[in-house]
Amino acid sequence: MREPLVLIPGLLLTDDFWREQIARLSDAAQCISPRCHYDQDNFGDMARLILAEVPDRFALCGLSMGGYVAQEIMRQAPQRVTRIALMDTSSRADTPEQTERRSALIRLSQIGRFKGVTPQLLPLLLHPDNQTNKILVDRIMAMAEAIGRDGFIRQQTAIINRPDGRPDLKTYKVPALVLCGRQDALTPLELHDEMASLIPNAVQVVLEHCGHLPPMELPDETAAALRQWLAA
Image (cartoon, rainbow, N blue to C red; front, side):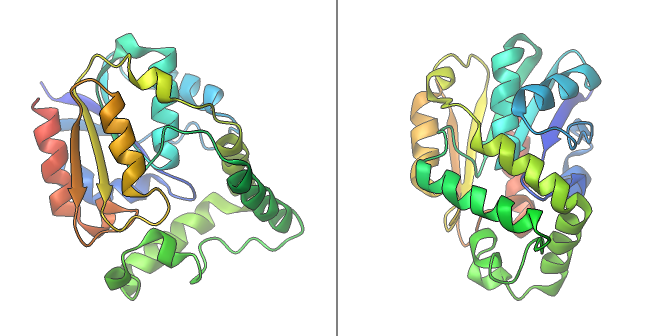
């Protein structure tokens, strides 16, 4: 019997983000990437909708914004989660500077200047070696276009209003994986060091020559880490 594995993508990413992981892990887990939360502007509602759709018990993996959703699911229904993987994310609330940058992007989008993931943003998402990978870049831009301006505004609004989750991490009682790319420019390694130090018995994995999107940038290495976590 394969364990259900709920996979939640990040900002401006769709379920297509998990394509390589689903292909590599479907023999070991029943992979589920929900879409029901895309229309929400807060993590409380996102978590409730996902919880209403997925099986009673499940493994949970979230990347970046998906990691914020995963942490909210752990706040709402920890008894339903069998194990948790947090990838290229943070447990901290936004700083005032981060909130102002997000608010400025929202304002630009509201006056019709939403351009999805632009070439200027790619250095924040991908390792330098991957920024000229046309297949990878085209997929990222297509996902951003699918989420669109209104979806982007909703997601940024949710991120701005997220709580500081660090006190909650200490209460986790399930096998936990904290994974990130060594060169993640958006959520740097030290944030993952902090999460791994707070979660009891967490396993930390750092992937070399990798940016903010390990499941796409290093699919084999990411799948190997997830497979080991699923077997824990």
